[in-house]
Each structure stands twice: as C-alpha cells, then as structure tokens.
Length: 188
Ligand code: GTP
Image (cartoon, rainbow, N blue to C red; front, side, top):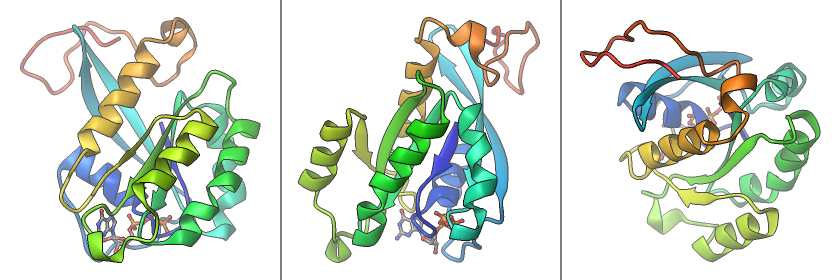
C-alpha cells in the first residue's frame, strides 16, 4: 500500500497510528519514501501489509511515482482542515490513475477529524468527491485513532478479495511460518 497526498495531511501519523499505535504532534516531513509493516488478519489468513509512506513535498514527487506502479492499494489523504489539500486531490488521483495498475484498490481519507472547529472541507464535499471518483471514502483522526484501523483493514480486505491478488501482488506472500504472532496461521 502506498500513502499519498499533500505534505502535512498526516500520512506518516496515520501509518504510525495503525502500525505502532502511536501519534506524534511534532512530525518531521518524510524525505523520499519510508516503509512500515503490519500484519493484518483477513479471514483465516495473516497478511503482512507493507505501508509505503511517501513525502508529499513537491521535490519528492518524481521519486514517489514508481511506487504507484507496484502498489496493490493506494491511500489518498487530504487534511479536512486544509482546503488546498482537498482541491489538489484531482492531481493526486490523476497521478495514481496514470501510474498505478488498472486494478489498484484506492481509498480516499479525510484526516484530522478531531479538529472539528478548524474544518474547511465538509463531509458532504468529501463524500461527493469520492462518489464522483468512484473511490471509497472515510474520515479519520491519526491523533485519536478514530477509523484508522477501519481504513487500512478495509483496504487490505478489498485487496485480498481481488481475484488476482494471490498471483500478482508482491505485497502479499504465502508461507507457513508464523509472523510475530502466537497464533500459527498461514500468510496469504
Ligand atoms: P509529509 O511527510 O511532508 O508528506 O507530511 P505527512 O502527510 O506525512 O504529515 P505528518 O504525518 O507528518 O503530519 C503533519 C502534522 O499534522 C504533524 O504535526 C502531525 O502531528 C499532524 N497530524 C497528523 N494527523 C493528525 C490528526 O489526525 N489530527 C491532528 N490534530 N493532527 C494531525
């Protein structure tokens, strides 16, 4: 999975919250690309999800582009307290659709839902954009953790349930070894 969107929308903190259960108020800009992993249970399988965090600053855009190509899923993030990060979604969506595989699973996330009094993008606008783009959407807070697991686990399930997932995805591997888990299950 690849995280993308403008700088400062909370991509790093969303995956930190999901993968490690932590949140940092002081978060450094991501330089290039960083990787975190998390095991997600889908049905009877443990899936090792690779979360690629891309730097949203303009200077990193050409570095990030190749990662879309190998992605099984892309999370497009905007900051609902920052209208500009929402208006630039058309650019990010175009980039992803140009560079990612045709069957890539997308998710649109409006982050910083805890900052209710600073909201610049309404729920209705987020939902309307998602409907128009035909992409699932939800609002999260990396700070409080609201709907963060739902976002990543939902996308993982959609990826795993794609007919070609076992064959084409380089992010999903099969093995009989356990992965830091007390329950021995196969990796799918
Ligand atoms: P780049 O690495 O430059 O692309 O930025 P990013 O999208 O990874 O943003 P990052 O996760 O570094 O977060 C930017 C700032 O927003 C930090 O100060 C975070 O603490 C803050 N932040 C991220 N998510 C939330 C959230 O859900 N709520 C609030 N209140 N602040 C958040």
